[in-house]
Length: 137
Ligand SMILES: [Zn+2]
Image (cartoon, rainbow, N blue to C red):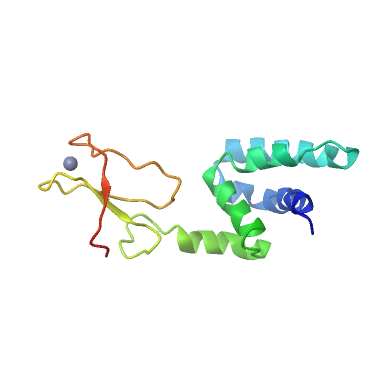
């Protein structure tokens, strides 16, 4: 299967899961966009780049697409995999959620990065960018 075909398949395959990946209004918008692209995909129009743009705009669909295209996960397994690798922020032992600390020694602000696309925030008290906890867990 060539990559462009795979992208079209991904656009088909992801639609039933959009409501679980995105907020309702966005899920509906993305679903409609994909439907439009799929509708014209047989007419010789290059819709692959448009599909890619839509699916990579939001981190949940971008991650879904990565697991589907690059990791070749079966469609039914992807949500489960995503939930495994994006645990709740209070799960301090999750390997995939590195801990960030305020660099001010006396400050106890912590933050867990659940998605590597998330920007690192500033400490809400000191307004300096938080740094990764080098001590690990
Ligand atoms: Zn601080």
